[in-house]
Image 1 (tube, one colour):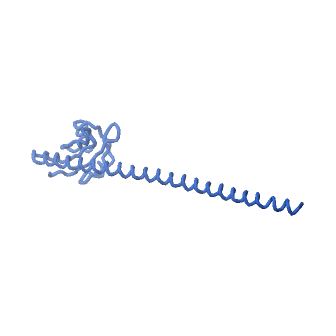
Image 2 (spheres, rainbow, N blue to C red; image 1 turned 45 degrees about the horizontal axis):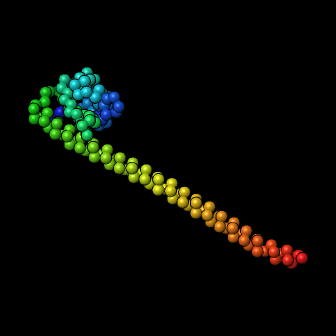
Image 3 (cartoon, rainbow, N blue to C red; image 1 turned 30 degrees about the horizontal axis):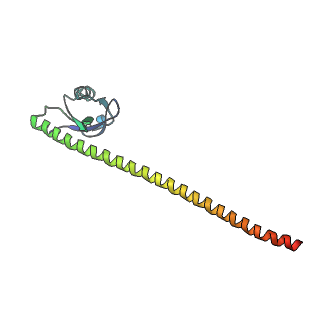
Length: 155
């Protein structure tokens, strides 16, 4: 593309926050919060970084804006470079959707494991209680058998 810096931002409520950047202004870009509207995002970065050319492409996942891929340079990008950014952004959106799906599945599996562990603990506690009651009943039966013998011997 000929960009001096590229960055990847994700939505964080009301705006976007840059999670990753590479290039000349990478350190100045990571962690920066910008508006979620593409035009305002570009203007904000031009002002913040002092770069003359900022081109952003929205990352849409499920019809909603999930982030943006941004190219920053000191000379204008041609049409081919802008198309390349759009192509990259669609691939990044797919990767972001996959990452979110995997994270949700992982969280679902953790929750299922927690529920199974709780059920196993409850079952172990119930089994322990059942064994304790059985042991008490056995002891009561033994005492009940021995009591008449002791009473009979005493008589």
